[in-house]
Image 1 (cartoon, rainbow, N blue to C red):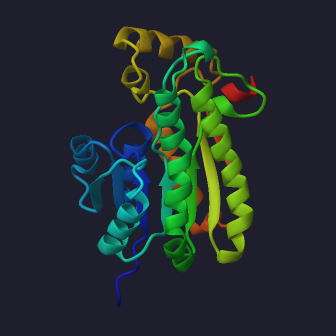
Image 2 (image 1 turned 120 degrees about the vertical axis):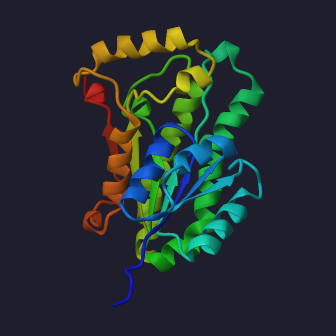
Length: 251
């Protein structure tokens, strides 16, 4: 009896937080996974103990990144069944404190890079009947404002629009596109964006009191949903952006 074909998954921003948890969840589910990120050391931490995870140190904002990433996945696995556009950068500033470099960096990584990586992967995704997962943010859903995080929120709101539009555009090619919008998740992102560890812990504690679920999220909470939405059994889900935020966005 021949061995069943294992799904091949590409996860960007796979060195920390939600990306790392997602890569491991897919690997535990039996998939082959290529994790992409800027730091080879953190990517190797993601892959540690998971022999089905391969690492690729690459900044997805670089012009040649789509070719490099897709070619690496096809070389390693021969197919791409799932593309998870997860990589993101943020920076806290009000309007009068924004600078061009920060705006370019956020829009480049959070919005422009997923457009061209997904475009480059279309042939492989079509051949596999694949799924694109765009990781957005519950903070940018609906009519909510996000003071001092406007550029990040703008990019994530635009990514949700791409999810809906790509779902319609790509459905005739057998490709689904779904979104996952995490709420407040303890990923350490605040510290990486410049907060002190003490300030970040205080922020998480404050948010836990506001979230109806009574706690902030864990990366694994988001990863579980990413895997579920890409299963064949979820094949009728398309164009949906799922909030996973302990009900904060509906309060």
